[in-house]
Picture 1 (spheres, one colour):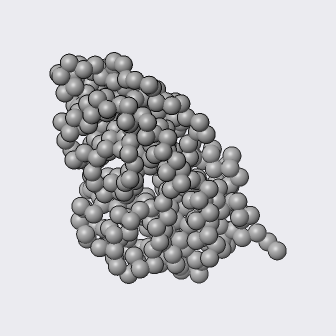
Picture 2: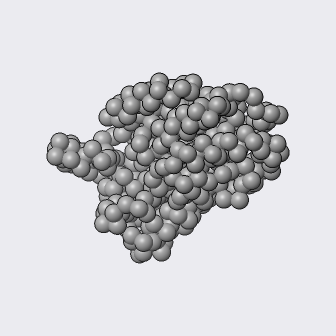
Picture 3: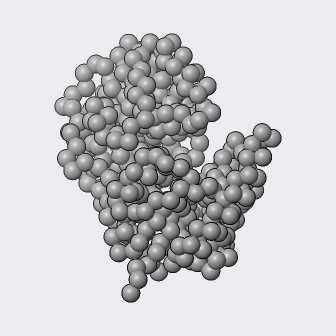
Length: 374
């Protein structure tokens, strides 16, 4: 018998949260013996990792919904990508004749529709959720995925956001929590915190993610007579260079030692050197992979008390929640970490054990593979 062919489609080739989940999904499906082909819009680190895992990778034009396309300047590109993407997807499915198409994220809307027209089963995996956004926009983003036969979401928060916007689609959705890999034996937390307090931020350098709040919180602590060292691990989207320039100006004025480390696919050495991880998102997050990584790294985590972040750190003794957008609250939480370091460090192993139980990659891979198979 010929092997089942599963076509995975993803809107980028970097190694941020949804990219890592696409890689884990591909590995899980490969482990079932299927032939896995991944369609990407370009080459990058994800492409390399996928091929190393045993997947085939094809680069095809595709419509990827970005905010920049919904402007007067972006509309010509939107229509161009729509037409190119339609033709490329139709031809690729005709050539490969996949048994299933797995559509990663909601911002590549043509693929589930074309799969339905081609008579191919589709599975959509929703990694986005903005409950505070426009309901009409959410409906338009989710609508094409009604063509999918099954829908996976990465948190209960994502499911409720989907249910509010499009109840019919939510009725066929199932929650599959992200799988988060980690070293087998991460370095233990230091026995005590000496100056400086080493604070780590991991993520995009964008206003919605809030790295400026980390710099501002460090500045407040400096004003209180405490020495703080901040590492910003991440890079800006194309077109957001202005924001990184503003961050650098804030850092220069903060009085704290701020390192712009750039993007690194391996975050664990940075977590090992940190005392505490801050996840300061201003807006809704569908989940909090980064927060889970901090817990798995045996480090205290300070996260915004909202959306999927609240769900990601629920029940962990080493995690604190703070109001979104408040640098003073982050500064106060950092002071609490320093003041009660013995409690935070003693709970680190039990928190890691619970995170391993909830987010073991093998559990995630098996769950995705099962939903793609049936």
